[in-house]
Length: 96
Image (cartoon, rainbow, N blue to C red; front, side, top):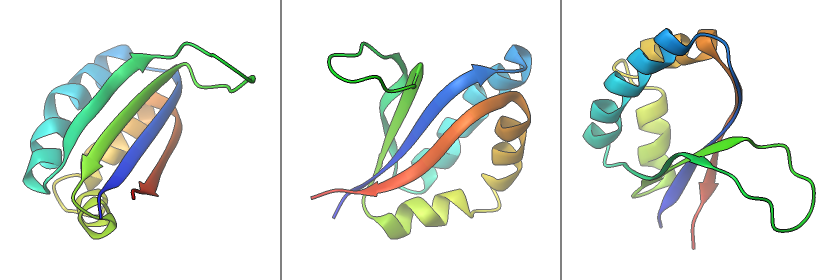
């Protein structure tokens, strides 16, 4: 069953660092079977009052693939880089 890693990005703290992350992260995602469905897409609210400003959605073949990517030695340093330069949330959603 597919799984989706969703990033809800609220505030960029360091644009240069985020640009480096954006250049380096895709290779790690592809290595673990993932692909971008939405990459920092602008959000238009249709109903309700959610807080997201920009979203990223990455599809993986399974929750296990997504977790393996997130915990991988290739991605961990990039996650720390992202966390230092961007304020937001990241979570996994199991698909149907």
